[in-house]
Length: 339
Image (cartoon, rainbow, N blue to C red; front, side):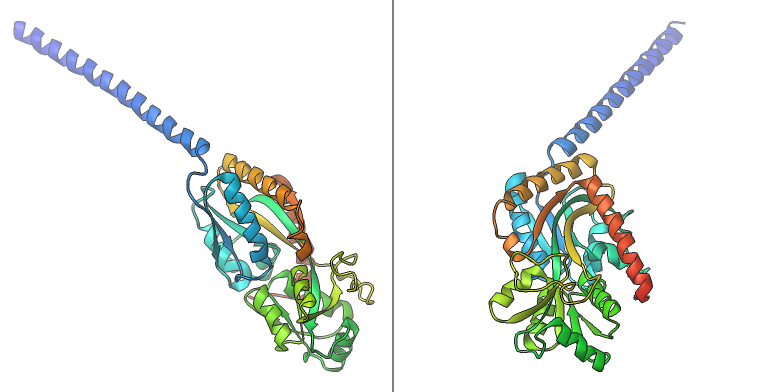
Protein backbone atom coordinates (compact mmCIF):
# COMPACT_ATOMS: atom_id res chain seq x y z
CA UNK A 1 0.00 0.00 0.00
CA UNK A 2 2.86 2.31 0.87
CA UNK A 3 4.45 1.63 -2.51
CA UNK A 4 1.16 2.36 -4.29
CA UNK A 5 0.70 5.61 -2.38
CA UNK A 6 4.27 6.59 -3.16
CA UNK A 7 3.82 5.87 -6.89
CA UNK A 8 0.58 7.84 -6.98
CA UNK A 9 2.26 10.79 -5.30
CA UNK A 10 5.14 10.65 -7.74
CA UNK A 11 2.75 10.56 -10.69
CA UNK A 12 0.83 13.50 -9.28
CA UNK A 13 4.05 15.46 -8.81
CA UNK A 14 5.11 14.70 -12.37
CA UNK A 15 1.74 15.87 -13.74
CA UNK A 16 1.93 19.11 -11.74
CA UNK A 17 5.51 19.66 -12.90
CA UNK A 18 4.57 19.10 -16.54
CA UNK A 19 1.63 21.47 -16.22
CA UNK A 20 3.89 24.06 -14.62
CA UNK A 21 6.43 23.69 -17.43
CA UNK A 22 3.71 23.91 -20.09
CA UNK A 23 2.29 27.12 -18.59
CA UNK A 24 5.73 28.65 -18.35
CA UNK A 25 6.67 27.53 -21.87
CA UNK A 26 3.53 29.18 -23.22
CA UNK A 27 4.36 32.38 -21.36
CA UNK A 28 7.92 32.31 -22.66
CA UNK A 29 6.72 31.79 -26.25
CA UNK A 30 4.20 34.64 -25.92
CA UNK A 31 6.86 36.93 -24.48
CA UNK A 32 9.26 36.08 -27.30
CA UNK A 33 6.57 36.70 -29.91
CA UNK A 34 5.60 40.04 -28.43
CA UNK A 35 9.20 41.14 -28.00
CA UNK A 36 9.85 40.17 -31.63
CA UNK A 37 6.91 42.21 -32.83
CA UNK A 38 7.71 45.41 -30.97
CA UNK A 39 11.12 46.04 -32.61
CA UNK A 40 9.66 45.32 -36.06
CA UNK A 41 7.63 48.53 -35.78
CA UNK A 42 9.77 50.61 -33.46
CA UNK A 43 13.22 50.00 -34.92
CA UNK A 44 12.38 50.56 -38.59
CA UNK A 45 14.53 51.37 -40.42
CA UNK A 46 17.66 49.85 -38.90
CA UNK A 47 19.39 48.76 -42.10
CA UNK A 48 20.01 50.19 -45.61
CA UNK A 49 17.03 50.88 -47.86
CA UNK A 50 17.26 50.18 -51.59
CA UNK A 51 15.35 52.23 -54.16
CA UNK A 52 15.22 50.45 -57.50
CA UNK A 53 15.32 52.71 -60.59
CA UNK A 54 13.68 51.28 -63.75
CA UNK A 55 15.97 53.14 -66.16
CA UNK A 56 19.61 53.86 -66.86
CA UNK A 57 21.64 56.47 -64.93
CA UNK A 58 21.64 59.98 -66.33
CA UNK A 59 17.98 60.19 -67.28
CA UNK A 60 15.15 62.08 -65.54
CA UNK A 61 14.40 59.23 -63.11
CA UNK A 62 18.03 59.34 -61.98
CA UNK A 63 17.95 63.13 -61.65
CA UNK A 64 14.90 62.83 -59.41
CA UNK A 65 16.17 59.83 -57.46
CA UNK A 66 19.52 61.27 -56.39
CA UNK A 67 18.32 64.25 -54.31
CA UNK A 68 15.39 62.17 -53.04
CA UNK A 69 17.63 59.34 -51.82
CA UNK A 70 20.11 61.78 -50.31
CA UNK A 71 17.34 63.50 -48.38
CA UNK A 72 15.84 60.22 -47.19
CA UNK A 73 19.24 59.06 -45.99
CA UNK A 74 19.52 62.15 -43.80
CA UNK A 75 15.91 61.95 -42.60
CA UNK A 76 15.82 58.23 -41.83
CA UNK A 77 19.38 57.91 -40.60
CA UNK A 78 20.28 54.84 -42.70
CA UNK A 79 22.00 54.45 -46.09
CA UNK A 80 19.63 54.72 -49.07
CA UNK A 81 21.05 52.89 -52.08
CA UNK A 82 20.01 53.39 -55.71
CA UNK A 83 19.91 50.21 -57.79
CA UNK A 84 19.41 50.48 -61.55
CA UNK A 85 17.43 47.78 -63.38
CA UNK A 86 16.54 49.14 -66.83
CA UNK A 87 14.64 47.35 -69.57
CA UNK A 88 11.19 46.34 -70.81
CA UNK A 89 9.66 49.76 -70.16
CA UNK A 90 10.37 49.49 -66.45
CA UNK A 91 8.86 46.02 -66.06
CA UNK A 92 12.14 44.34 -65.06
CA UNK A 93 12.53 46.64 -62.08
CA UNK A 94 8.87 46.40 -61.10
CA UNK A 95 8.85 42.61 -61.23
CA UNK A 96 12.00 42.53 -59.11
CA UNK A 97 10.48 44.74 -56.41
CA UNK A 98 7.15 42.91 -56.52
CA UNK A 99 9.00 39.70 -55.58
CA UNK A 100 11.10 41.39 -52.87
CA UNK A 101 10.51 41.05 -49.14
CA UNK A 102 7.57 43.26 -48.15
CA UNK A 103 9.45 44.78 -45.23
CA UNK A 104 9.93 48.36 -46.42
CA UNK A 105 13.61 47.94 -47.26
CA UNK A 106 13.13 47.51 -51.03
CA UNK A 107 11.25 50.25 -52.86
CA UNK A 108 10.90 51.38 -56.45
CA UNK A 109 10.80 54.86 -57.97
CA UNK A 110 7.99 54.25 -60.43
CA UNK A 111 7.24 56.44 -63.43
CA UNK A 112 4.04 56.82 -65.41
CA UNK A 113 4.91 53.67 -67.37
CA UNK A 114 3.98 51.78 -64.20
CA UNK A 115 0.31 52.32 -65.00
CA UNK A 116 0.76 51.79 -68.74
CA UNK A 117 2.72 48.52 -68.98
CA UNK A 118 -0.08 46.18 -67.84
CA UNK A 119 -2.44 47.88 -70.32
CA UNK A 120 -0.13 46.90 -73.18
CA UNK A 121 0.81 43.38 -72.14
CA UNK A 122 -0.80 40.54 -70.24
CA UNK A 123 2.76 39.44 -69.42
CA UNK A 124 3.76 42.62 -67.62
CA UNK A 125 4.36 40.48 -64.54
CA UNK A 126 2.56 42.70 -62.06
CA UNK A 127 -0.77 44.29 -61.27
CA UNK A 128 -0.42 48.03 -60.55
CA UNK A 129 -3.21 47.95 -57.98
CA UNK A 130 -2.94 44.50 -56.41
CA UNK A 131 0.84 44.02 -56.22
CA UNK A 132 2.13 47.32 -54.84
CA UNK A 133 1.52 49.66 -51.94
CA UNK A 134 1.73 53.36 -52.88
CA UNK A 135 3.99 55.33 -50.54
CA UNK A 136 4.08 58.80 -52.06
CA UNK A 137 3.85 60.70 -55.31
CA UNK A 138 6.95 62.90 -55.52
CA UNK A 139 6.96 64.90 -58.76
CA UNK A 140 5.40 65.60 -62.14
CA UNK A 141 7.09 66.76 -65.31
CA UNK A 142 5.64 67.73 -68.72
CA UNK A 143 7.07 66.21 -71.87
CA UNK A 144 8.72 68.20 -74.65
CA UNK A 145 9.32 67.29 -78.30
CA UNK A 146 12.99 67.86 -79.16
CA UNK A 147 15.09 67.54 -82.28
CA UNK A 148 18.82 67.79 -82.84
CA UNK A 149 20.19 71.30 -83.08
CA UNK A 150 21.44 70.57 -86.63
CA UNK A 151 18.22 68.95 -87.86
CA UNK A 152 16.07 70.33 -90.66
CA UNK A 153 13.09 70.87 -88.31
CA UNK A 154 12.72 74.40 -87.03
CA UNK A 155 9.19 73.85 -85.75
CA UNK A 156 6.79 71.03 -85.00
CA UNK A 157 4.92 72.04 -88.18
CA UNK A 158 8.06 71.24 -90.23
CA UNK A 159 8.19 67.75 -88.76
CA UNK A 160 4.49 67.08 -89.39
CA UNK A 161 4.71 68.30 -92.99
CA UNK A 162 7.57 65.92 -93.73
CA UNK A 163 5.84 63.04 -91.94
CA UNK A 164 2.69 63.60 -93.96
CA UNK A 165 4.65 63.53 -97.19
CA UNK A 166 6.75 60.55 -96.09
CA UNK A 167 4.64 58.14 -94.00
CA UNK A 168 6.67 56.05 -91.53
CA UNK A 169 9.91 57.82 -92.50
CA UNK A 170 10.09 60.30 -89.60
CA UNK A 171 11.56 58.58 -86.55
CA UNK A 172 10.74 59.65 -83.01
CA UNK A 173 12.53 58.14 -80.01
CA UNK A 174 11.16 57.30 -76.60
CA UNK A 175 12.68 56.13 -73.33
CA UNK A 176 11.10 52.72 -73.88
CA UNK A 177 8.04 50.89 -75.10
CA UNK A 178 5.06 51.66 -72.91
CA UNK A 179 6.39 54.90 -71.44
CA UNK A 180 4.61 58.23 -71.58
CA UNK A 181 7.17 59.28 -74.20
CA UNK A 182 6.01 56.36 -76.34
CA UNK A 183 2.33 57.14 -75.88
CA UNK A 184 3.04 60.81 -76.62
CA UNK A 185 4.18 59.68 -80.08
CA UNK A 186 0.90 57.80 -80.50
CA UNK A 187 -1.04 60.85 -79.35
CA UNK A 188 0.79 63.06 -81.85
CA UNK A 189 0.04 60.60 -84.66
CA UNK A 190 -3.60 60.49 -83.61
CA UNK A 191 -3.90 64.27 -83.32
CA UNK A 192 -2.32 64.99 -86.70
CA UNK A 193 -3.20 61.92 -88.75
CA UNK A 194 0.43 61.26 -89.69
CA UNK A 195 2.37 57.99 -89.39
CA UNK A 196 5.50 58.26 -87.28
CA UNK A 197 8.00 55.49 -86.60
CA UNK A 198 8.60 54.87 -82.91
CA UNK A 199 12.17 54.03 -81.86
CA UNK A 200 12.30 52.82 -78.22
CA UNK A 201 15.45 53.07 -76.10
CA UNK A 202 16.34 51.74 -72.65
CA UNK A 203 15.89 55.00 -70.80
CA UNK A 204 15.70 58.74 -71.33
CA UNK A 205 19.44 59.41 -71.60
CA UNK A 206 20.11 57.21 -74.66
CA UNK A 207 16.94 58.37 -76.41
CA UNK A 208 17.92 62.02 -76.00
CA UNK A 209 21.46 61.25 -77.15
CA UNK A 210 20.02 59.66 -80.30
CA UNK A 211 18.26 62.93 -81.12
CA UNK A 212 21.45 64.93 -80.49
CA UNK A 213 23.49 62.77 -82.86
CA UNK A 214 20.79 62.68 -85.53
CA UNK A 215 20.18 58.94 -85.22
CA UNK A 216 16.48 59.83 -84.92
CA UNK A 217 14.55 62.82 -86.17
CA UNK A 218 13.08 63.74 -82.81
CA UNK A 219 12.48 62.57 -79.26
CA UNK A 220 9.82 63.01 -76.62
CA UNK A 221 11.56 63.56 -73.29
CA UNK A 222 11.08 65.32 -70.00
CA UNK A 223 11.54 69.03 -69.47
CA UNK A 224 14.85 68.25 -67.72
CA UNK A 225 16.38 67.88 -71.20
CA UNK A 226 15.88 71.61 -71.76
CA UNK A 227 19.38 71.89 -70.29
CA UNK A 228 20.65 70.45 -73.57
CA UNK A 229 18.79 73.17 -75.45
CA UNK A 230 20.69 75.76 -73.41
CA UNK A 231 23.90 73.85 -74.15
CA UNK A 232 23.24 74.10 -77.91
CA UNK A 233 22.73 70.36 -78.45
CA UNK A 234 18.96 70.15 -78.89
CA UNK A 235 16.14 72.29 -80.24
CA UNK A 236 12.80 72.29 -78.41
CA UNK A 237 9.88 72.16 -80.85
CA UNK A 238 6.82 72.11 -78.57
CA UNK A 239 5.76 71.53 -74.97
CA UNK A 240 3.06 68.93 -74.23
CA UNK A 241 1.50 71.13 -71.57
CA UNK A 242 -1.43 73.50 -71.30
CA UNK A 243 0.88 76.46 -70.73
CA UNK A 244 4.42 77.43 -71.68
CA UNK A 245 7.06 76.52 -69.15
CA UNK A 246 8.69 79.21 -67.06
CA UNK A 247 12.10 77.78 -67.92
CA UNK A 248 11.30 77.68 -71.67
CA UNK A 249 9.23 80.73 -72.46
CA UNK A 250 10.36 80.68 -76.10
CA UNK A 251 9.00 77.18 -76.72
CA UNK A 252 5.33 77.05 -77.77
CA UNK A 253 2.81 74.54 -76.52
CA UNK A 254 1.40 72.05 -79.01
CA UNK A 255 -1.90 73.89 -78.82
CA UNK A 256 -0.17 77.12 -79.86
CA UNK A 257 1.40 75.17 -82.71
CA UNK A 258 -2.10 74.18 -83.87
CA UNK A 259 -2.14 70.64 -82.46
CA UNK A 260 -4.82 69.95 -79.85
CA UNK A 261 -5.10 67.18 -77.26
CA UNK A 262 -1.37 66.99 -76.67
CA UNK A 263 -0.96 67.31 -72.91
CA UNK A 264 1.37 64.62 -71.55
CA UNK A 265 2.84 64.77 -68.07
CA UNK A 266 5.22 62.23 -66.66
CA UNK A 267 5.20 61.48 -62.96
CA UNK A 268 7.42 59.89 -60.33
CA UNK A 269 6.36 58.08 -57.19
CA UNK A 270 7.67 55.72 -54.53
CA UNK A 271 6.08 52.27 -54.22
CA UNK A 272 6.60 49.34 -51.86
CA UNK A 273 5.62 45.70 -52.40
CA UNK A 274 2.07 44.81 -51.40
CA UNK A 275 1.89 43.64 -47.81
CA UNK A 276 4.47 46.08 -46.49
CA UNK A 277 3.31 46.89 -42.93
CA UNK A 278 1.20 50.04 -42.78
CA UNK A 279 3.29 51.67 -40.01
CA UNK A 280 6.39 51.32 -42.17
CA UNK A 281 4.61 52.72 -45.22
CA UNK A 282 3.46 55.69 -43.19
CA UNK A 283 6.94 56.30 -41.79
CA UNK A 284 8.37 56.25 -45.31
CA UNK A 285 5.60 58.56 -46.51
CA UNK A 286 6.33 61.08 -43.75
CA UNK A 287 10.04 60.94 -44.55
CA UNK A 288 9.40 61.55 -48.26
CA UNK A 289 7.08 64.44 -47.45
CA UNK A 290 9.77 66.06 -45.30
CA UNK A 291 12.40 65.63 -48.04
CA UNK A 292 10.08 67.08 -50.70
CA UNK A 293 9.41 70.10 -48.51
CA UNK A 294 13.14 70.76 -48.40
CA UNK A 295 13.56 70.14 -52.14
CA UNK A 296 10.73 72.52 -53.01
CA UNK A 297 12.66 75.36 -51.35
CA UNK A 298 15.52 75.24 -53.83
CA UNK A 299 15.61 75.59 -57.61
CA UNK A 300 17.64 72.49 -58.44
CA UNK A 301 14.65 70.39 -59.53
CA UNK A 302 12.37 73.20 -60.71
CA UNK A 303 15.13 74.43 -63.03
CA UNK A 304 15.01 70.98 -64.66
CA UNK A 305 11.27 71.14 -65.19
CA UNK A 306 10.23 69.01 -62.19
CA UNK A 307 7.18 70.08 -60.22
CA UNK A 308 7.73 68.63 -56.75
CA UNK A 309 4.41 67.44 -55.35
CA UNK A 310 3.53 65.17 -52.43
CA UNK A 311 0.53 62.86 -52.27
CA UNK A 312 0.32 60.23 -49.53
CA UNK A 313 -0.64 56.54 -49.91
CA UNK A 314 -4.41 57.00 -50.32
CA UNK A 315 -4.24 59.99 -52.68
CA UNK A 316 -1.44 58.39 -54.67
CA UNK A 317 -3.54 55.24 -55.16
CA UNK A 318 -6.45 57.35 -56.45
CA UNK A 319 -4.06 59.11 -58.84
CA UNK A 320 -2.78 55.76 -60.19
CA UNK A 321 -6.34 54.56 -60.77
CA UNK A 322 -7.05 57.75 -62.74
CA UNK A 323 -3.91 57.20 -64.84
CA UNK A 324 -5.02 53.65 -65.65
CA UNK A 325 -8.37 54.93 -66.86
CA UNK A 326 -6.81 57.71 -68.92
CA UNK A 327 -4.22 55.61 -70.76
CA UNK A 328 -6.53 52.63 -71.28
CA UNK A 329 -8.61 54.81 -73.62
CA UNK A 330 -5.63 55.67 -75.85
CA UNK A 331 -4.30 52.11 -75.85
CA UNK A 332 -7.65 50.83 -77.09
CA UNK A 333 -8.11 53.59 -79.67
CA UNK A 334 -4.61 53.12 -81.11
CA UNK A 335 -4.61 49.31 -80.77
CA UNK A 336 -1.27 49.44 -78.97
CA UNK A 337 0.02 46.25 -77.46
CA UNK A 338 2.93 43.89 -77.04
CA UNK A 339 1.11 40.54 -76.87
